[in-house]
Length: 311
Ligand code: FES
Image 1 (cartoon, rainbow, N blue to C red):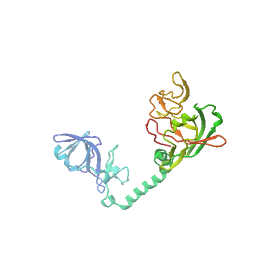
Image 2: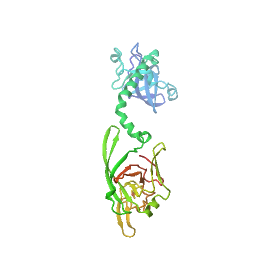
Image 3: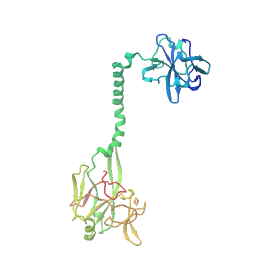
Image 4: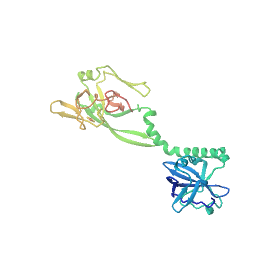
């Protein structure tokens, strides 16, 4: 049936019912005749030889087999074919017209496993990956940051103790911190709170002894000595990370108050009220003889009962 040219999307009928529609045609590359039609039926594509075609009409292809026999035709292995759009086969388009569909031509057996073909496919993939890597690297770094970036343990000067006039009163220190995210360098306004603790307050803050800070590998970075009365609290509320203030409370006196969900902390950082799961986070602090204050801007995960360092 060298002249069979079923239209793409034509209905395909067996003697006992419709089974699908024409998805492609397959051409014999030597004779340039249609050798098979590919019928899409219930999510599969089966190759039906033209010898099984009884008639081709305008909108339908009639097969000579029944539905059960149709199910025995092999499924199309698309990788074993190239399309007339991928390779130019002289005179093929003159002989077979299936627009807007495509004519498939079997790959020669040797070509299927051709090392050269695989080599070039692999080569193109590697080159593509090499070209694309610089573009996606910043994104990958950003995503993977928590997994491999060491914590930032550098000391930041945030001000001088001369600003603190009274014991057990929260004093805010605002400073700028530089960040390097992927390729961009940026500065961010940050703030922490300091308390010059009275002996009683200091005792409560250091009720478990000196406070030790660790890096991501568990090595000690710094120890806050309990004899130093200056205590720095992270400016982020441990509940969900909002900024809090030092405020007068009508029943509790002077407290740290978080406006987001109304957690209240005393001057020792302990939770007096609200949903906060833990006390305010104490930061590593150094006070020079000149009164200059340096801290390490340690960050802990919000919402956890225990401190989980994240930066
Ligand atoms: S974030 Fe501070 S109480 Fe919720």
